[in-house]
Image (tube, one colour):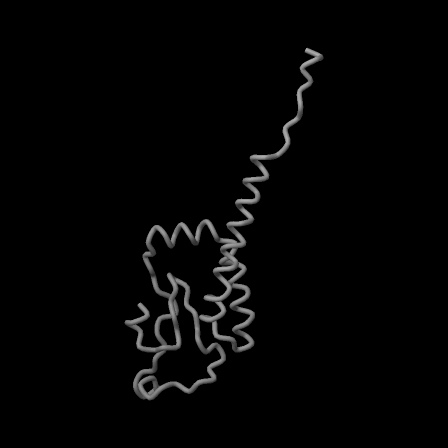
Length: 120
């Protein structure tokens, strides 16, 4: 989809649209003028993600929520959404899976109550 849309302002990661210029600071190129029909591009596209992307988005859903909040907040300040998303997601995903592993490890290795065999 990124190649089909001729506007280099938006980048689509799965079905997430990321804006490289959220405050519209850069003027549109000549091909995107209103006389030529503009380059608005689609606001939403239907993407049939593969099973790997779907499983990542499902298993790391909290990280996508945190990243959406961070990307949205920094976009209001004019920070590139693509850069924010690409920098924030790897550490957030690593931290999320580390936390899940820690929970599983803690659950597996929790101390079990000792039974006193001498009273039996």
